[in-house]
Image 1: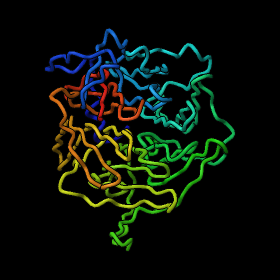
Image 2: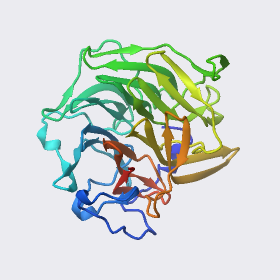
Image 3: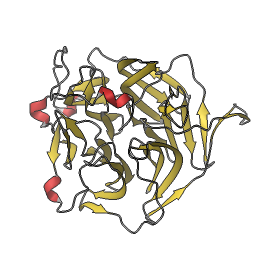
Image 4: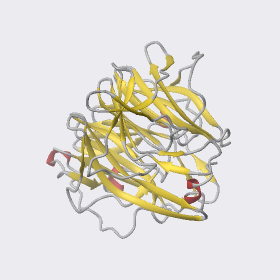
Length: 377
């Protein structure tokens, strides 16, 4: 297991919603359209799945999102292999358990990732099973046919969890970094998965900082990165912010990355986006999802600082929008009702300008099963 930050979740967790918040009077009729910002769905209407964290979510098709797996830890770790469909239907939002539609399912896991590759299809990769072993299997979920393992792939990324995974173009997904729980190894490699060819290609590219004239400023190779998210921004462009790593290979000194990076598939390189005055600040185990028009929403996470034998934890609930066209951050302060502090949750862009959030762990170390919608005009 991870040596430091996972101590914050390896204690008894209880299944509950966020406390100290008044319920928002939800407009369940989608035709009325929510106001801009966060809005909590009524649990009795949306039919929420079990509380969980370290699950994975991805857009399936317009108005639909898929969720698989994750876990909970009340006394012993409990992992799930259930599959849930979130959809907007008849002017309402619903969760539907579609696990029984498949005889064959991916094994129980958490800390995996999923990505939409178009045409009602989602790819699942990696994660950690109940034996605390990292995985590198590849599964396809098809809206019409359910789950199918994609076998016969000889060259593929090592077993890992807590990596970045994002759609990069139709039928292709980008993978970056991650962690192996048995090897205690963090990765800094980049891979592209091609669904049509059913093959992985390692990119062998570095993290370098360039100025506005594309001149190299500095070499930013690092030991490895995990606990972050990749987001789709436009065709052949992906984005990530911050993340967690160790400064040295024996994992005695940690650090956070505090800047943003954009991958350009045409140039085949990672480009650094300089820090501006307004930015989210360092964090790990946050969520980020595409909102449309070159924008991505980053939400919440946790910041763990260890100085000597003293550990401090900051739980976050802020929302930030990154605009690819302007290369600027904007703090999202649209209404008074927002999800509480949390980490290890997930979000999915189930339709343009809207995303859905589910679960995670709150500041009281409770496992959550609340569902929220975020909308911009």
